[in-house]
Image (cartoon, rainbow, N blue to C red):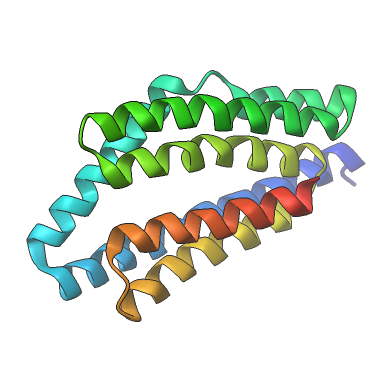
Length: 173
């Protein structure tokens, strides 16, 4: 029989792995729908903006998610807000730079991408793996649904990230 720690790790790995798989599959579906609705140019424009946001986020990721994961275990949920707000401030600064360089949606996505790390870190720290799964899959489904409903690809990415990040943050802390 597995100890409580091993059981928790297995449950966590299951939900996080299933969420990752579902988000990946829904990501492919999203890009197929974007291609169907907006053509190759639409995919290129949206992919470029999301790519720029990903690069800027990668450069500015100072480990806020990991800080929250460890901090919540040591200091409680108050550490979530430290990491979340630091991510937001750094993300806004990086997003403004991207905006000045002409990447409108890319700049708007940077704070959201950075803030998602502390949200996931906080939920994992308190053992709420199912919420990580639910909010990630909900966001991915919302993104596909918005594009199918006629919303542009980049607004769909933006609003799905807003909704899933805010809901995850509220559940976490």
